[in-house]
Image 1 (spheres, one colour):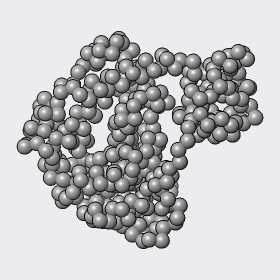
Image 2 (cartoon, rainbow, N blue to C red):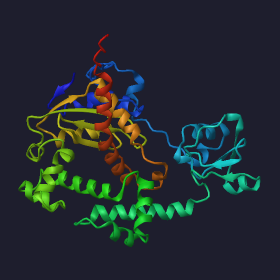
Image 3 (tube, rainbow, N blue to C red):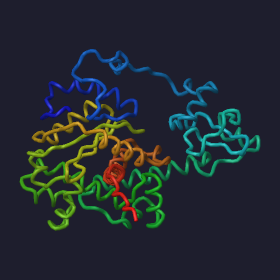
Image 4 (cartoon, helix red, strand yellow):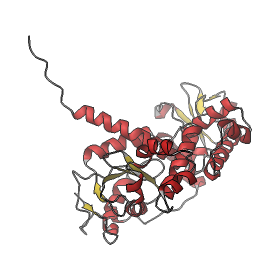
Length: 355
């Protein structure tokens, strides 16, 4: 297993191996590493990760086979470039629609929803292919609410948020959750938790970090500290000094996700574009901790949690930063449950005594 106060000189050699796994949507595990990440004989296809191919969406989805591939993969990038019809149901949908995949011979493609309607087909009720403008307005309202939460020194109430973006309290709550997968209150709590994690290493005292982040009492903060930090505030402030932290990286629709945990709970969920950058952030956050690549069980539980936490279909209308913020909230909630399931599956049951 790779254990260390993760030396920066070793990072490029480690992450060349890690990136290859995460970009395939796989997991980085410790108990059964496929190859030694410090070796130079990695497969060529794992090394050629910096190559990029640029193309336009207009040419990407011109052929029926390319369109069918986008439908199979539920590629949200294809939305708006074409629509598909399932002739056996008479319904047309966006390429990213999560409806059950039809047989290829029953699928037709159209450039615009008007073309499908002209032939007598009706819109899908799940992805609402005709409601692009309404969805765009709702997505802008949710994004604006998230910006207000992120920038407000004091947490606004649900009524204030709803009024600010032009919706009733009930409608806004339902709308926010349909786009982000979490409630406004959960996003508020996550924003406050993020601020206190950022403030702890920089503030003069723990109390300064607590109050500047929006906590109005020490009791409230310390009751939530383990869930927010995965360790005591003092240890977090000291860069995880004396703490062993397991970590793993898994793929998601929004890029690689790094999850780190102590024996007390999750201490970090990091998202981004490059695994290398995530590992640097982990090392910076917990510079005095012992970082250990997680075993197979932990990695499998995290992979299951991230799959469970994938954003709802409507989230594609939101800015990437907000989608990733909401994803980290859902992952933090899903990882403990996924770990508990793995434990229940591995604990042997006591034999039933014979009569």
